[in-house]
Every structure is written in C-alpha cells, then in structure tokens.
Image (cartoon, rainbow, N blue to C red; front, side, top):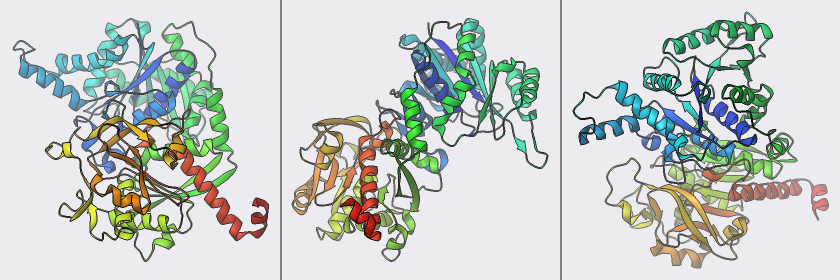
Length: 549
C-alpha cells in the first residue's frame, strides 16, 4: 500500500511549499522509492487555464493536456517524471464533480454538504494515485495558508484521513516562517506557534515543522519550537534561504527530512541517496566558465512566475553549456523602431515569449526584425513564433497588412489564423490545443540538428496557427517549415535559412525541460548566444580574435 505525506503551510503564502515537497520527493526517489506529488489548490476556478498570468503565474500544461498549477513544473523538473490531470485538483473541480453527481441523483436525495460530500471527494482524490500501485509514496501539497476559509475543507479531509489510515501511513509536514527582527536582532517563533495551534485546532497535528528563515536556527530556538508545537526536536527542520531552488534537496538531506519521514512511516529498506547527477548540475550552475545576456521579450515581465518554466529552462541549459545565463526582461509594449537598438543592442540572444492578446505585439515584431537583420540568435515560442512569421511577411515578403486574426480579425492577409477546429468553440476553459502532439522534422535543418532525430513530441497550448496557404511564399523567400504535425500538417517549427540561429516553435518546449534532461532547443540557443558573444568580444579585442583564429 502507498503511504502519504501531506505538506501544509502557515503564517504566509509563497513560502515555497512546492519546492519543499519537490525536494523531499527527490530525496525519497534518490533512496529508491517510487514517488509522485499532487497539488490541491483552494481556488474555485476549475483550473488555472483562464487565469491572467498576473493573477497566478504561468499555466503549466501536462502531457495529457491538463492546464495546471505552476508547482507541477517544479515536480517534473525535480523528479524527471511526467505529471497528469490527477496531480492537480482545485476546489472548483471538486465542487463540479459533486454537483454533477447531485444532478444525476447519485446521493439518493440526501442534502449535499461540505461534510461529508465535499470532504469525501477530496479524500477520494488524495488517495487516487496511491490506488494505482505505481507509487510507494504520494506527496500532497495543500495550497493556501492554514486559517484560510478556502483551505478548511482540505484540512478537514486531511484530519479524517489521519484518523482513517494506519498511523504509519501518513506524515504531515508543516512549512512555516520564523521572521528575523533586525532591530531586535532575534528570531521570533510566535507566528509558528500560532500557525501550528491553528492547525491543531482543526484536528491536524504536524509530525515535522519546516522553518523558512533568513538566519540559522539555534538549538535553543529549535527546542522552543518543538516544546510549544508538540514535535520532537529533530523534527524541527531549518530551511534557510538558498541561492537557487536546486540547492534545497541537499539542504533538506543535511537536515535529515527524508529520514525523519521514513522513520515515521516505518520504512526500513532504502538505499543511500544517489544524487551524483544533481551535484554535478549544481557544480556547473555555481561555477560557469562563460556568461551570456539574453533578452526575454514579454508583456508579463512584472511577475517572474509568469515565465517560470522558461527561466528554469535557461538555468538547465546554462548549466549544460557551463555558462551563466543572465536574463534581461524587456517589456514588449515599450519597444519601438526608435529605441530598439538602445534596448536590445547589448544582448547576445533574444527570446520572444508566449502570450495572448493585442497588447505589446507590435513591440515583439520590432524585436524580431532587429534579431533577423542583425544576425542575433533568436528563439520564438508560440506567440513568439507567430510574431516572427508576421514580421517576415511584412518586411521580407512585402505583405504590409499581414497579421494574426487573434489581433486583427479583419486582416486581408491572415498569415496566422484560428485553427479550423477552434472556430466553433465558444467556451474558453480547457478548449485550446492542449498537451503532447507529435512533430516530424525535416532533414538537414537547424531543428533536425538540435534534436538529432526525425520525430519529436512536444506540449502545446494555443488556438492560432501558421496559415499554410502562405507556406510556399515563405519557403521560396528563405523561411522554411522544418517541423510539421504528421496528421494535420500544422507547422510546428519555422527557421530562417542563412541566419546563424533563428528558430520559432509553435509548441512550448520549456514545459519538458528538467535538471537531468535539459530541453534541446534551449541548450542550442544558449550555445548559439555564447558563440555570438565570443565573436562580439573578438571584434572588440583584436588579441582575442587572433587567439580564436
């Protein structure tokens, strides 16, 4: 039977429950156990697919086409396994299921209530992955903060499971904050005490308390937390701020978080953790041999979580190239022909990010033109690829009114058009082209050299596509379709012949990048940016140029 670890949070949000859950899962996996993680979100949206990126950060898409919380990206990046629809559950999905059952008469005329009907559905979802017999341990992250009204049904479901399951089958890890008051020069444990008391009042007693802190916890502080929160002193874990999230598994291993949890779950057979590749990755990340500056052209740059998977993919690709990738955020809304050199001239590479809507698209088109004309390594993702297509039509093919029907439904030249199967759809949630689709690569192209294979599979999230009516014009002028969907003929990849590195992809490659398997397009893009930087430095320094020769 699978065992269950529940991760809750207190004091404040954004403490890093997802990172702690992923780090614990990584350590247990490294000890030979089969582990997966699921996220329970307390908001009433069925999924984050219709949420503005400013509201909730990026929407992470799984292989099976589920639009999920961005924490699932952390789970995949740490564990190097795929997640699915079952790994992310929201209050909206819970209530939707219960209401549908009520309409079907499944409750035999009974009054439908939060307890037991909502909590029973939450428990069913919590246990679902464990029933597959694929995993030894299921880690469930409970979103929100203890004390939130929205989280109460999840905490009640957790309380019931602690009572229903054998004691050694559940562990509760509570993440909290130990603030440091600089004026008084001391750490304060009172917020943690109140958080644990509030959790205990709901009938849930934590087995482990993980303390986010800026300063080291003294033995006296640990003893005080243990005493007032009713846990063993060794179960008070220090989670100090780290320079990178990828250090956290090693920090948690030093704190013996995995051993404490296994002891509580009566797991006695395990191996020493195998983290050789992880440590090698960290060494390359911390001690790079070179540096590149890459511009991220987007319209949600005020919130870093809006491009979380892209930023993490650059971390993975940078380590693979032993190169520090410095990201410069450039708001596309403020790029014009007049200031484009000032904003982009110092870059070694340019990534035009995905997005929706009209705002900022003209700035993205100007940025693409700058990269194309100046041989600057360019990488466009989803909308970024579409902007490259529009820019090429306007400035190379001479189709001055070329546009996407997303931004201009009346354009006479819709080089980007709504997918045929999307034209009759009116509901927004979960109706895009979502999930993993195959793509065949054309031989002797940049795309084929990047992947070094004839066929790939990547994840999608879009409604608009390249209009194949214009494909011949593009390919005659030098922009070729180097990747296509074998069934629909949908153009998945475009690239520019004669350019050092210019590629646009309709899919989202950032969603499959992990520490152990960095995404190939990102790796090649960083390599191209590094070569561009070397050439640029050689021109500035004749001595370097002679060395390169």
